[in-house]
Image (cartoon, rainbow, N blue to C red; front, top):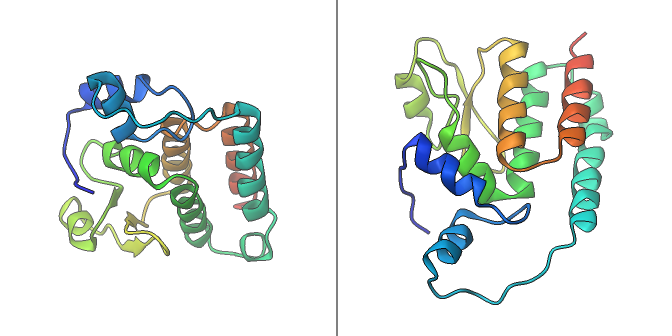
Length: 170
């Protein structure tokens, strides 16, 4: 698989063309360009919602997550779960997410280090991504919320994840 860079307007256009949760960028582009359209499979949105619920509920109620005292470690666990839920959508969302002066996620530590001072990159275990770790909790919530939204995860699930993530910080 190849990686390409696209501008924000084009990314938003491609993301808006998503027909179902979990549809990757290649499938969207193939459909729009009418290139080698693979056989379509129907995805039951109820089943997809159940899969989301199960995945995130399992993480949020796991001993590892519940007993983790470090907000950054819980943040990394959530990012890893999002990546494992749909690597293609996560990659699109992660690539487009950045602040006005620095990147939040990258595929190498050096990119994050050069995008700002004192970024303290941490590896998102089980993924090819690194994330900056010296942001405040509000910024971590923003990052999680943005990625989940860009991945097409339901608003109810986003709110539940953010509520549990934020409440464990108190």
